[in-house]
Length: 87
Image (cartoon, rainbow, N blue to C red; front, side, top):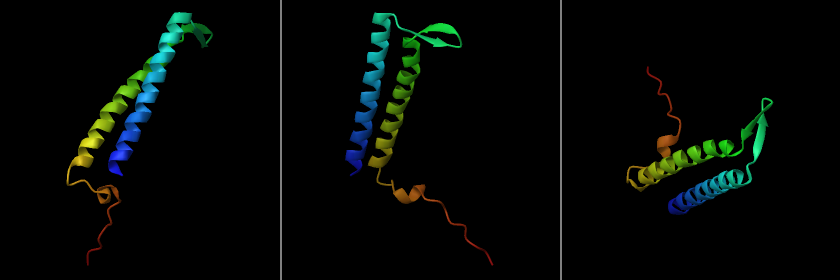
């Protein structure tokens, strides 16, 4: 189950990166522009933050897969801690 979840995250991230690169290449090839605040801006600039966030997401998924491989990983580590009452 853990391995399948990581593979799914990598797959979704790869799709997002591929589509964002395709958008950037298409925008450059067709010289598309977007109007932002009454100014014409090249459309490929809108794809750059998506590529950046996709790369960061790859790093985070990689770190998550490393921590899941550790034997100390447990879902109980993420649950809220109960406050013990003292007498």
